[in-house]
Image (cartoon, rainbow, N blue to C red; front, side):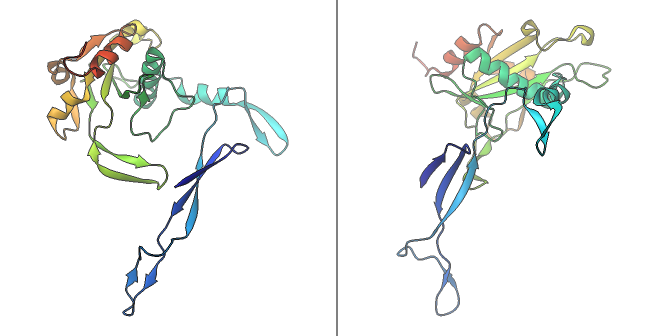
Length: 238
């Protein structure tokens, strides 16, 4: 498979071999190995980082509304489940110093450390953005998944936990009046080698109590990088 880069459009083009459809004497479809198949071009977009100052345009006219306005509107509630999950990835990437320029929505795992260790990030919280009569029961998703192939636009392979290390980000603060996800003292991070999760087979979710029984490294933000490095270290190696 040959990749070509068009720098002007920031798109990556792949030439993908597609076997030709032919028929035998009985009208059955064949895909003979002896023939050289034609190719199709699959266009893959590489997003560029935005600065926030970019504005909407209507024809040649620039409108006052900016990307920063969109970010403020869509992502200000850091306690909401969807935004908190992405924010947790950001926190872990900051701690590990491995944030990519742009988050990849369908990546097989969330982050890769500077040492090449694939990391999966999960988040949960006692507090929610809706009305509560009591703190929420903390659970994390740990389901094995198939890998997403950007070239084909499909999931491929058997379901696995593709990262080497899992980081469970728990927003531990319980007072809604003073809750602030930007305050890193209100977070706890539980770091676990994926090999321990794999002992649970295809289990989909895990409670906080069951997670603690697996012996994760529990740390604050400052200790996160060393905890991930230790979790990734092969058994018996110091």
